[in-house]
Image 1 (cartoon, helix red, strand yellow):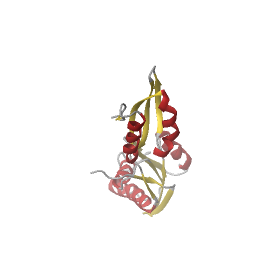
Image 2 (cartoon, rainbow, N blue to C red; image 1 turned 60 degrees about the vertical axis):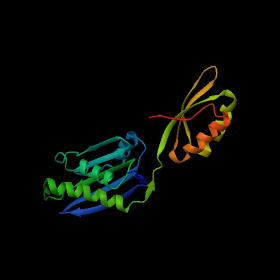
Image 3 (cartoon, rainbow, N blue to C red; image 1 turned 180 degrees about the vertical axis):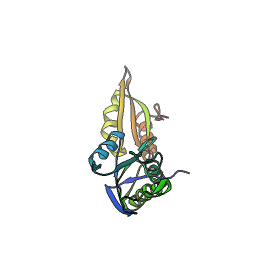
Image 4 (cartoon, rainbow, N blue to C red; image 1 turned 90 degrees about the vertical axis):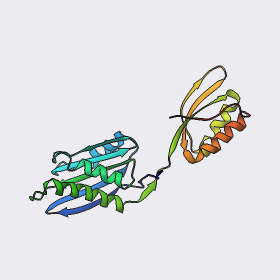
Length: 198
C-alpha cells in the first residue's frame, strides 16, 4: 500500500482538561530532529508538571515521557502521529497536574488522545515522495541541466567532476522522475541514464 503521508501546513494547538489536569498539545511541521528539539525548547513551560514530546521524521523518531511513568506519554503521542499518517511532525504535550492521579491507562489515553485531537484539527499538507538519483553528464550539457533543475523541483545534493564531465546526485519528487529521465536521454542522445539510488 503506497499511502501519501502528510505534514502540517502550520503550527496548531489544542487544550483539554481531564480530571483537573490541564493538557495542552502543540504540533508543528519540522524537517530535522534539530528543528523538532528547537520547537520543544521554544514551547515547553518550565512551570508545568511535564512537557512530554514525540517526533517522526522519515525513519527517525524519538519520544520522551518527561517524568511520567515509562511508556504512558511519548509513545502514545508517537502512535497518534503515525496512526494519522503524518511525517515531519513534532508534538509537545504540556501537563499541569490537577491533584487527581490518572493511572497508566488514563495517562496513555490522555496524551495519545490530545495529540490525535490536535492533529485532526490541524491543516494537513501532502508530502511529496522524493527520490535520490544519480546521473553523469558531459561538460557541454551540465549548465543546461542546472538551469532547468527548478522545473523538476530538483535539488543538487552532490557533484563530482572527472575528465569527461560531472556526476550529479539529485533529489526530486517521484512524479518528476520520468520527465528528468527523458531530458537526460535527449541531452545525451541516449548515452546516459538516470539511476535511482537505494
